[in-house]
Image (cartoon, rainbow, N blue to C red; front, side, top):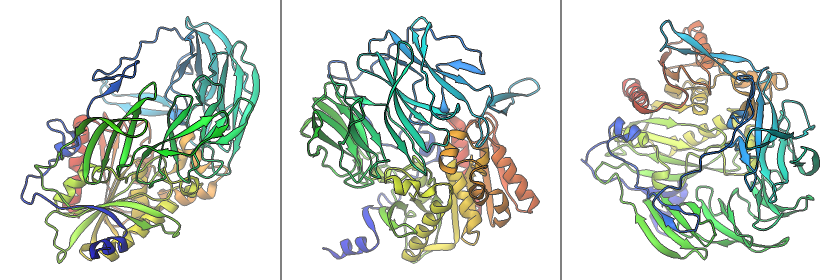
Length: 616
């Protein structure tokens, strides 16, 4: 082992992207954020499969739905519209049967749900739009699933009797013959789930196939994946072996594990003989394709089909004879190939050039650091300032998200970069991004470390990573450390700033959660339960009483039309800052929602950049 390899191992380094192109041009905020004039991200080939498993450059056009839905009583009772605020993997609210003759249609009754006013500046005297927003511990929507004909006639309503009226009906899946519907029924507390089978013709309950229980939470994210020409199906859960694995089931509840991984997996496809899936078993920061043979209830040994280091995105042909493999790694901008199901390349489509060839490039490190409880490796990427000189001192920006269903660091090009990080490194900053306990793709125990106390384990891990970083790199100016995050990351930025005002001199929080009692039921109650059942947790994680702890400069940005994190959060925190005589800057985007786009997004990042340039 070389000396440099030994040094990398000791520092927890996995890979390094070297500094390059000194004196070359620098990114603008417009280029880094909007990409309106030129792309600074690697080229991607537009490539799809047609129905005959042939490659095509034309995106297949989805057939326009030719159906009529039942009439409800808007806005209280609606059919075929978003339910559960898009949680539980949901994206389809009308699900056609295999032959298209029947529809499973969600009915949502939100008459008991409270409203929240969003201010509209475009009307003559200003007006409010009252949105339905179910907050934690308050009345929620009530769901039903109706079986309808395509002319809108209701054939039946599923006779669901489990749990309370505010239960969740998730991931409805038709049987292969279109006579039954399978629904994963979840109680509102999200601790108990039953996979039930219902008869479509009259909505009658047939049987419970299997059930799940967990004191932290149960989160069904997938429909059932029936094997081709079979009534056996694949079911994904993290509640049986601690990782999100695939299980082979039948309609009587017989279960066999398909993916024997101590890692999270995701279903890709099946041809009746092989099941294809991606997995983090090679490394939590890599994604690879595997297949396993299934014969009846017998399961073979997994075969790995992608061997190149990095993160592979897979698009399987409809007949499962070949697949498009798009992959990158820290120093590989992007490769697109077509492979057969033995993993052999049969068509080399693209080797993307480095889109930053014309720009000054900063050193980027991909590495790991131990979690605060010393049980896990947490992965990070670190940007060094341009023209780095270890004898000088440089400011540091910590960019944080840290919440569930996120993975900020992976072995993709430049570590899954946000180009704003490169821009700030070009301006002379270290930029540090780290995943922590509570994020995805690491198994149930890792993710559920935040149960009933959002922000606690995450903060411990972020501070542990920062401490290790400061010990390793003396060139970081300990008096010039800032933190920035958006949404859950905004919550984390303010949590870190109020926990350690001695460390963080500048904080920029966008659309931040301030108190979980003001967040929506589906997401918030999964992780925190309710203010009534977990008062200690809500009190301990609320940022309102911590506003007085702030030190340094703080900027909060938010869209006035934000219907994800309503601005009751930000305004209440600002009021607490006023009462505590703490300076705080606030910038509202009058016509923006939670995620800003277009010119507003560029303006936002110009403001964030200027704030750090001015005060850090």
